[in-house]
Length: 61
Ligand SMILES: [Zn+2]
Image (cartoon, rainbow, N blue to C red; front, side):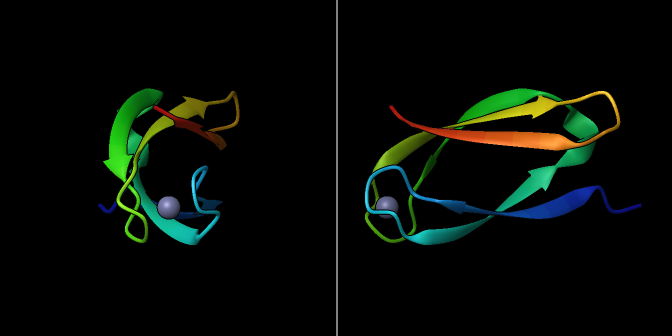
């Protein structure tokens, strides 16, 4: 089974369009990922809601 899902987001630093690969089976999670364009560290906060929908928030670390 493949639990990876793609989410399109905008970098909070440079506003570049990014595609994040999210492991749905891990549920709610927070991790840090470097923007592929400007290389700034952004905090990725994933919240799993009732129907399995994933809400993604990006913050400047
Ligand atoms: Zn960026």
